[in-house]
Length: 255
View 1 (cartoon, rainbow, N blue to C red):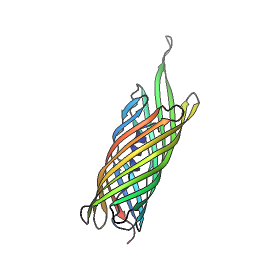
View 2: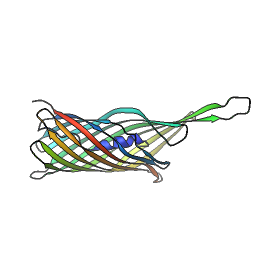
View 3: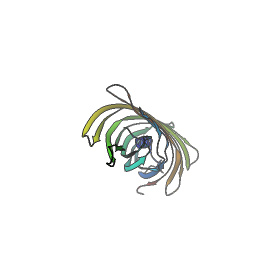
View 4: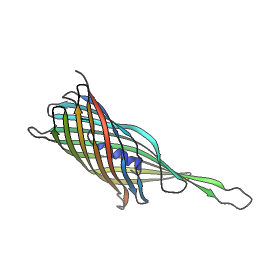
């Protein structure tokens, strides 16, 4: 993935809103972004955006199935650090996991899979010089970067009940291997290039949850460190480091 907005989406891997009881629940979390996106051309700040995360949980006995995701967001524009150049990104995300709450302990363990889709468009305009008395004409070169990246994520969690209605939980996730193919196209030259990419990710989440009769409110912070290299030569593709404060609410389904 070659975009700052992708870094935002990478932060959404952490677990969703805590359930109010043993019933299925559906929730929404708003995540703010504070961090950087780095490529071989340099480092830039990630746009500060409220990213919505949808979450569905289905518990059964000591197990729990969770599916969360972000619908297609964008295009989001941000600075490229290059004169007369603009960049926009569009991204979507889905994640599913099976979590097991270990008996007689506060620990849990999970196994899941994650998938991102992104498209980044960079356009740079220059003025083509000419001899007098002609008028110089602007010339725009547009680069399209599209990628789909996925992998298996392993999770461990620890929860502390503070009271019957309040709890504090910590989750740490590791995705040791993620694979993607970046498809690049340049207009108006009709040039295309496909580059395989290999990545890994570490993420963490600290969450404080407050249960009421009708809903569960949650507040906390997420951390993401995503690193990707091109498989052909091992060169840096991109690195995303992100801290995301968040707030969310979930509602139980059924009676």
